[in-house]
Image 1 (cartoon, rainbow, N blue to C red):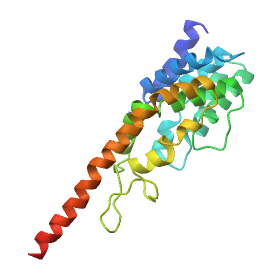
Image 2 (image 1 turned 120 degrees about the vertical axis):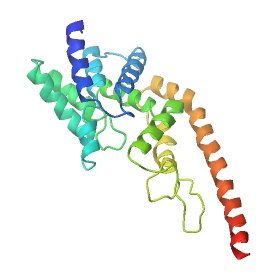
Image 3 (image 1 turned 90 degrees about the horizontal axis):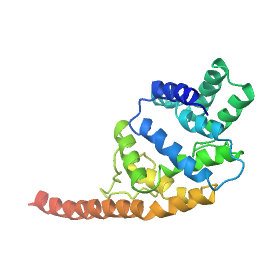
Length: 226
């Protein structure tokens, strides 16, 4: 890939980004992780991979404005149109479109090509470990969702059976389970190296807030009876 082509793709990506949890630095982390994973894979088309990494979240703005939309679907079509308009071959644009369409965790679109699998893994790496915790907290704050939910009895829920969105629910639904959803050996290995940091944070936060509620409710009940 020439510097001119890379600059074209990067400039378009930057014009589409506006989400603090999915900002340009997320894009670069995904790209750099993808390049590291790719070194242990065979027959990787680096032009497709780099292009897909740079453009994989360009549909985030539309999803944020309209949550019924899927950013992977929106971004895939945006990328395809942009590439064709810029003179890229339709076959190239279609391969990039597939990578972007298949990169989402909550999706039925399985990555079929090596480039799509690498992008999926590189993107999911950014949901593991400490960075995954930080980005999730950023996003939950951005959409005004709480750290945790409290049941009718005033007990802090750990996210396991929560029906309302929260950081704990997202941890139990996605962050805790993502380590078994990697397609490449290198991606899975990199994820496992980060895993304990996320576990420690979740458990520490839960162990801090639960006792406060339990003791506090008892003390408050005593005072309100007097």
